[in-house]
Length: 113
Length: 112
Image (tube, rainbow over all chains, first blue to last red; front, side):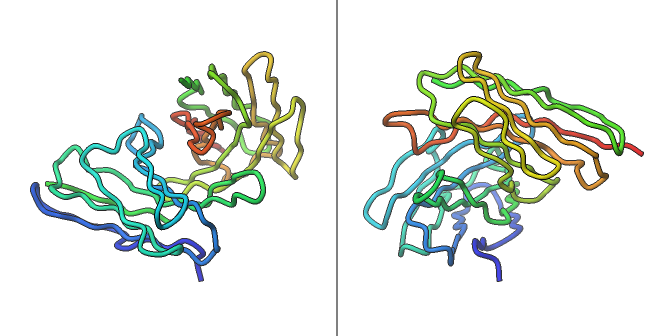
C-alpha cells in the first residue's frame, strides 16, 4: 500500500462550489504539506502543518483552508472554487529525523469550470 | 527570498550523459534537493546535498558548490525511462527552513 494517499485523484467541479481534498499517510511523519503545481510555475506551497495544533500559511494560501484532523490526516479545502484554482495538487510528508526529505502523494487533478 | 533557475527543457540521446544545472540565490542556505517527476505523477526524491562536492548514487550524481550558488544533476547511461522533469529545490536556513523553494523544473527528453 502507498505510504501517502490522496483522494480524490481527479475532480471536476464548477465555480463557487466547496471542494475538499484529503491526504492520509502511514509513514508516521509529523509534518505535512499541501502544494499546487501549474505548468511553467513549478510547485508552490499552500499550507503546512507540524502537528494537529500547528498550521502555517505558505506562499499562496489565499482562497484555501486546511484541517489537520490527526497526525495521519491533512485536508485542503477550497471554500468557493474559481477557475484559476485548476491545478495539480500534491500532499507531502516530511521525515524530520533525517534530511527533511519530502515524500509526495500521487496528486489530485482538480478542474474548476 | 529565494530565486532558483533551471533550464526549461533538454534533449539527450539514449546511452549518453546529461548534466542539468541549477543556480540559486538565497538569503540563507541549508541544503539542496533534486527530485524526479514523470508526467502526471508525484515527484520522487533523488538526492540531497548540503556540503560542497559530488554525491554519487548509481547512474545519478549530484554536485553542489555553496560559494557559487550552483548545483548540477548528472545522469549517466541514459535510458528512455529517464524522460521526466527534474526539480531542484532549496532548503533555506533559519525560520524558513521548513519551506522548500522549488525551481520550475527541467523537462528532459531522451531520444533513441
